[in-house]
Amino acid sequence: MKAEQILPADTRAVLDAQKSDIFSTFHCIQIGKVEKVTKAEQTVEVTLQIRRPAQDGTSAAIPLLVDVPYFVLQGGKSYIDMPIAVGDYCIVLFNDRDIDTWWSTANMADPATTRKHDLSDGIAIVGINPKTSPLPMDGTFVRILGTSGPGAEKEAARKGDAVASTAVEAAAFWAWVVTVSSVLNSLVPGSVPSVPSSLTGKITGGSSEVKIG
Image 1: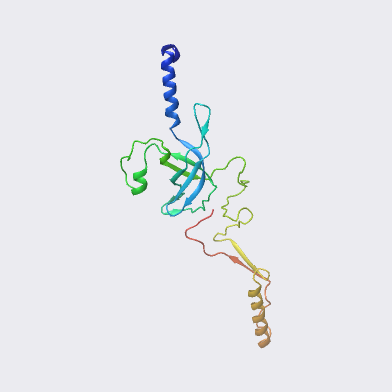
Image 2: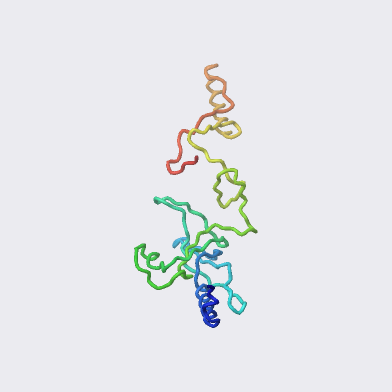
């Protein structure tokens, strides 16, 4: 039997109104836009991008979120430092309970208030884009881009990769080699073999902190 066949119409209306009221203040995930970045505290101020509808058909912007911790990809004291900037879009996840005590002390504790899925307990994950401004990615290789943008990236060198030096790439070095060769040959003719046009070799060392496969 359906609920509408059991409950009187006025009771259903009350329950529906209560359900709408509960969900109007129940926050799970929202799209936000960064308005301010505080690097020292690793927090951002965020404007949520979906307005809050009202029962009368109107809508209103949700108040600015302040002191929102932002997610940093990290582990074992290593991390990726991204230049988060005003205008970046993010996903804000609203915690089940009040996170103030943990955020302030890093200690496990009871929630300081009875808040649940509240606007005060959001965490921002920066890095989502609307359809109107996708990143210029083609998916053909792995790359990490800085603020210089596409076209400025270089291929990463690894231990064992071949290297080469030519007169065009290191003109001062090759000019010195030619000069020294000429001086030695003027003193002892034929003592120095012909100067090569380039040198080749391999990278013999690499970073112990970064490995690219």
